[in-house]
Image (cartoon, rainbow, N blue to C red; front, side, top):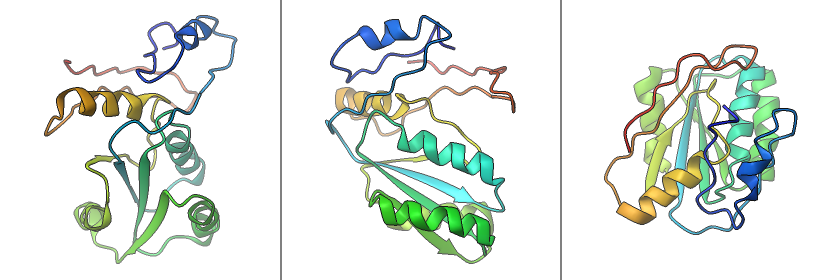
Length: 172
């Protein structure tokens, strides 16, 4: 992963890619100024494993592209520990909103998120997904360059130890 890691299209200096060459060095994430469209990220939540949810939300918060909106849509009544985690997040960052939805399944939950998203573009992220730190930067660069109707992105499956094992790379 570190060897083939994408560089940030909005980064001011190309040295960040060189930092990734040493597997023992930490990955440095630099925030860049907003240079494009607001991207709404809808995350449907149903009985999440809290550790995975924390990782998924943190991966959105660590995006180098800062012009995003995270809509966490709860499908049914969440546990008290999930609420205890989510409430301070929304209070601390105006880009994060928690939306409550009666238990209705994934379609109902996604539609609830779509009904309030403000972004020119929308993406869906599961409660156990991890976004690479420059993922939204690449999406924003593609939007700025081509103004597409739809974008497809690659993905990889990561096991509980953090090992990637099933990459799916979509064409440019």
